[in-house]
Image 1 (tube, rainbow, N blue to C red):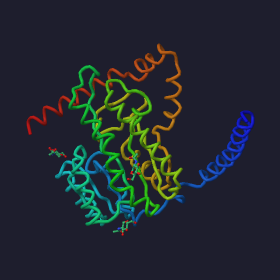
Image 2: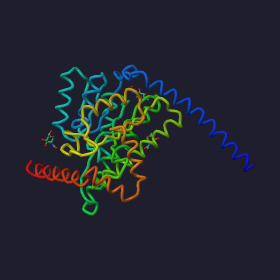
Image 3: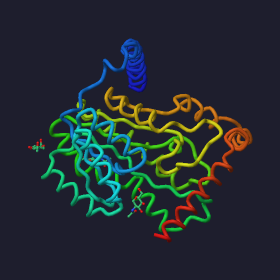
Image 4: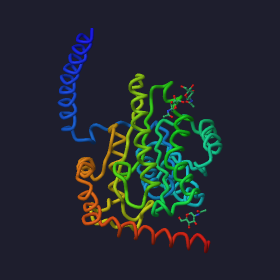
Length: 318
Ligand SMILES: *[C@@H]1O[C@H](CO)[C@@H](O)[C@H](O)[C@H]1NC(C)=O
Ligand SMILES: *[C@@H]1O[C@H](CO)[C@@H](O)[C@H](O)[C@H]1NC(C)=O
Ligand SMILES: *[C@@H]1O[C@H](CO)[C@@H](O)[C@H](O)[C@H]1NC(C)=O
């Protein structure tokens, strides 16, 4: 019996390898077709973007509205929301904005039910809103820890629960998680951020398994793990030495293409996919040297900490 069992497993693995080979060939030949010919249409879709009024979220809102989607923005900054909605409307795009604090569960549920009544079923969710503080682990305070978990990961669960049932009924939808390279490797002075981004990656991949194994082949998932990007977002002035910071417009274009071609995972720059496992398996000493001598991790965190201090000062002035 035991032998039979082992043989059956060996047989299944052999068959799996054979079909995997076919799948690899298939996706290789598909990748030879330029991606602009592989894009799906999104002009009938309703896209929800959290944090859609600023930074990367704003760029995604504008680009997705230009493709004809009805963009629904959730943000906490009313004046920023108004600016983006006006900008998109002036370009003849469809856009509606709502003030929604996603750290508040009741506000998520309330705003979601308003959207279902006023606009319809959301078919693409982009969990984009994020929060970060750059501090040594021992200096982080309880409120910051709770806030970062609420925004960066718990909100994904709450938003999933409000919109996924309709997607499942219609077997149609797309869930996009904007994570970070900090979700692939522990980032210096960003314990809270890294922890929530690892959580987001885990959530996203498990959700993928739930959906695909249960047969929802019409609901797509895309995980995005970018490195730092310049000028907008949470780390606008951080200038890393290596790898170089990404251009936000390029990043937004890559994400849009990823959504349109149902790409499962986007890591940018792409070679980080291989760098993380590599340095993870280096001897401990070399790992630390890599972060200090090549990435200049300490300078990076210093510039971010300075930026946050200046933001806090501005907040107090306002
Ligand atoms: C909204 O964002 C603008 C900058 O775009 C800022 O000046 C303003 O203080 C923000 N308002 C709130 C309530 O955070
Ligand atoms: C939303 O999806 C549900 C479930 O399929 C459907 O009954 C309902 O009519 C849809 N609402 C709209 C506005 O299309
Ligand atoms: C997402 O929502 C669906 C429908 O309510 C639920 O079945 C599923 O377990 C949820 N998944 C997660 C990871 O929260």
